[in-house]
Length: 212
Image (tube, rainbow, N blue to C red):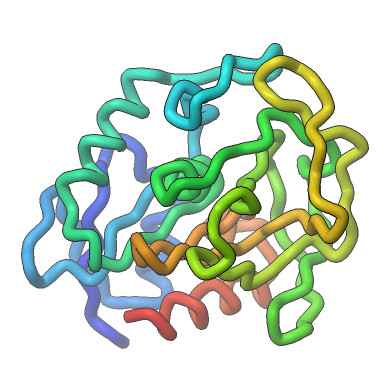
C-alpha cells in the first residue's frame, strides 16, 4: 500500500475521511506542513463566507466565519505548488481561493445522481450540497472540469442577492474541477461517505494518484 502524509486540520476531519484514505493508502496524518507532506486536505462543512468572493450572504447561505478564517490561514501557510484536495465545502473554498466564486443556492443536488467524467464515464455520486463551484468567470486555462453532472439538475441558480444568476449558454454543473495555479483537485460529492458508490470512490482515488 502506498505511503502518504496528509496535512489537515484535525478538528474538521471526521472518521469518514480517515476510513476512506486509510482504505486506499498507508497514511500519516499531520496538522502542520513539512516537506514530506503528500497533499493538504480541505473537508466538508458549512457554506463558505461569501465575503471571500465579494458577494452578499444569500437567504439560504449559512456560514462559520471563524472556521473560514482558520482554513484560509491554513491555505496561506502551504506552498502554492503543494497538491491540495477539497471535498464539498473544501472544494468550494479552494474554488474561491483559486479565483472563482460559488452559486449560493441550487436545487437537485441533495441525493444520488450521475456524473459524466472527462473520459465519458457515467458514474453515480453521493451528493449533498446546495451551493456549487463556479469557475466560469476565471480564465479557461486556470481550471479543468474533470466531471460534470449528467444533466443540469437545478431549477434555479441564486446569487447573494437572492436573484437568478445569468449563466453561460454552454454551462454545465461542475462536479470535479482541477485548478492548476494552486494545484487543487476539488469535488462536490462525498467519496468518503460509507454509502458512496464504489466506482465514485475509486474514480477519486484514480484522480488523486494522477497528481501525487
